[in-house]
Image 1 (cartoon, rainbow, N blue to C red):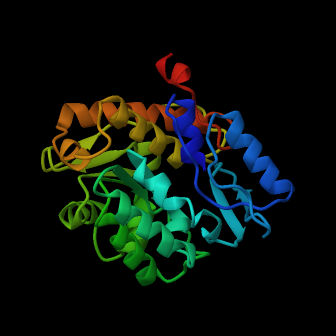
Image 2: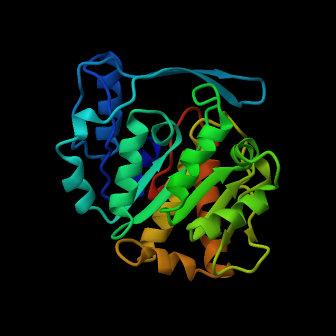
Length: 280
């Protein structure tokens, strides 16, 4: 949802396909999405809206407690048509690892891979999917079909405790991804593509006074996708165009995405920037 809001605020026509209930929380989510310009082709169902309770520590970092009901049953009749018409599909986190919805998400990725830019953020939640080997299997199933993968260094070290984040990024390129971006907090993002040098590309974090870190990764992901789409990289053949990005292009894309994350962490909550804010 946060990535959908981020993309819509950056001027892209965006559809959110998820589930939420006909309750107060669901109405709040629907209002938030519509106010940001996100389209909702799938309406609410009768189950309670899933809830995450966030707790902030003294450094502004968040931990979460979840009450979840995850499936895409309400989207079953429309999903094929939605996927056929899209030029870009983003999936990630709990939705791509928690059954029964995860299988539907993986099927969607496979269906879209031939004609759309596919991006993925594992955004692991060990309190929900505590088995790292199970999470690793789900992640690798999506990476195989994804063009762009973004993950935090914490995610990669949890998924693959026996190797460095750089080794995992190279392994994911070999598995099928064309661009792997690793976020490293205040160190800034690092990326490796088939077209960059072997050491990849690093850019500094956008320096701000941190309010909290909620939504930082999603804002970076949305701006990363936006920067690619702005360069005409979407639709059929996107994988080859992503793979051809060199150091200079990747550096510019990362800097744009890092600025979006910086703006978000400078204010409370998951509040991604508009295109006008990023241009300032």
